[in-house]
Image (cartoon, rainbow, N blue to C red):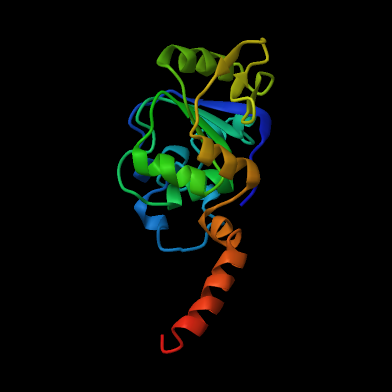
Length: 201
């Protein structure tokens, strides 16, 4: 998993509440178990019309936001089903951080497991960041995980809270497999001991 330390990039404003996982990646794209290739279908029903043509007014189709790495969203982002394809699609598009007043629990947890930083801020601070993001590609936002700070191009700084263990995992690029591999020595020692103490197992 890619480490997350400090990110400076374009933030795309998505001023919608209750954005569910089916809006993030519709159900017809859930057949794959690969984490790559889903970015083109991120927010598919909002990005494309029935003929597959881009809808120019959707934020990620606008030239200023095609390479956005940060998403500013409304409350209860990621609600709905528990599909892990939702963070996969965000990450494959290039989104490394989502900032919102609140998140659905399962989506929030899945973000950390896939190298995405979900940041919860008070609604009034999210509104300020939303207005900043609406300025386009010249208004770049910096997310510093180590310092737990978000800063705007105007010099405004917002602090955020994060669980220390989850922060450690993102900083070190450790998903569940990575965490397990850190314990390889202890696992091998345990297996060797069990082979002696319980050879019948």
